[in-house]
Image 1 (cartoon, helix red, strand yellow):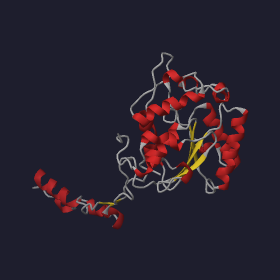
Image 2 (cartoon, rainbow, N blue to C red):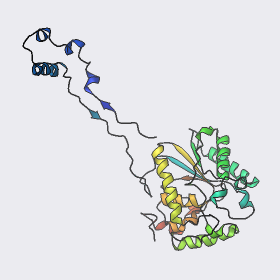
Image 3 (tube, rainbow, N blue to C red):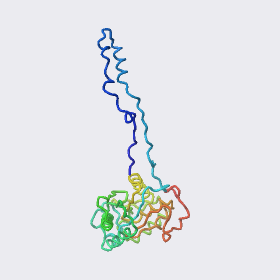
Image 4 (cartoon, one colour):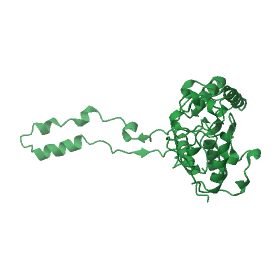
Length: 297
């Protein structure tokens, strides 16, 4: 949580203010026929003088600087969840145009709802929200639907669902929009060459984002979360895998060019642990730490 404003302690808190009599001008001075304006001002300055002001400002507790990847520590506990299969994905079609992200067609398929239900039950079994938690889903239809299912299963109030409007958008794949899902392997092949390589552009408004572009977005998201919360549990719900795989690689200082080896399947749940990574997802590049992502080339 944001730290409270610094505490200010003054001497007036320690000593009661002078009594009203202190501020009275002596009657004999007022009745004197030889009083001058200078004498009056001198008397007033003495009469209304107050005790010196002593100010002590408490040092801010646990001050946090600019969030950087990989972080030295995390102030919160994070769970990463990919939403279940969407209607577009059930048809085997790539759909990443943000214009359609709130469309009903971008919602969960029947299979996706079951995958998300399993994810919600898995979070419950992991005790993710035993002491309450915040749900941060993309505003994309399937991700927000997934958050609602997770909230219902884990007894979380809807007031704890915080929709994210841009930083968690599905990665824009440019000219791959509308192609078969299998084409994603071509994008990952480009990613493995350079994090700055973008998919070919398209004129329908679909962004063509590189890994570096996604990295910037998820870093901004983490900066907000690490500033806004402290010692809380946050469940991040993404409509795709790339947001989460790039985020996990960045947190752990791994080579972002190999982020696809941390691929999240529909409905997959993972605890974001800065000190370890699931063995079955261990990328070959794990031995090559990237200390200043995205500059890993």
